[in-house]
Image (cartoon, rainbow, N blue to C red; front, top):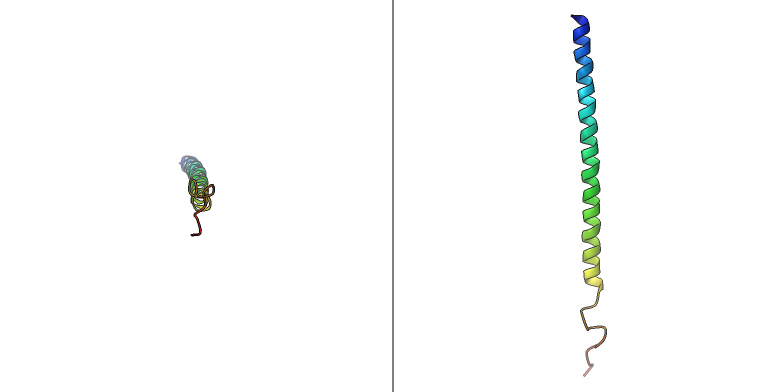
Length: 64
């Protein structure tokens, strides 16, 4: 009986480790997606404000 309990404890421990590993991989993947999305949004917003409006650089307004 004692060996069966030890075997059950060992299997439970393996399940916990496997689940922990899966959760870790999922959280790392999710964090990478968040960082990637943030970089895309940041570069899009920065480019939006830095790029001149179409035709503005070619034809500046007349001062008079």
